[in-house]
Image (cartoon, rainbow, N blue to C red; front, side, top):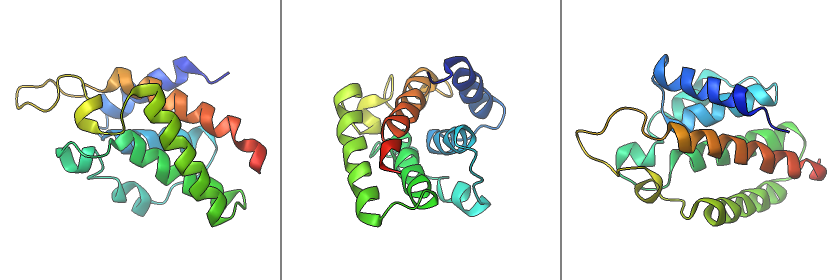
Length: 142
């Protein structure tokens, strides 16, 4: 069972105390859950990955997950082809579970200048748990 309380605490901490975006939250928590160290360049690469810098394109929770699947897969010796298959399956399953891959569709209240910060905290809790379970379910490929 994925530790829901741990995920909630980490999501909250990363959003409210480090003020990072959803892709970074996803990367950091998944790395912690899998005891993998992320280089600063990887974290920096996710800076604009919150719906393409707020444009509303692919959700950062997806982007961070896909980045992590690549890291996790290579760390565990998976072939590039298998990693691509896992990414495809993840995107398909995520869309089925949450209804979209687009930030503009997933983000509560959309994008308005008067939105409070970190609107996606609740969604992030669910998405991190979903992604962690997806990885656990697909560890059989290792």
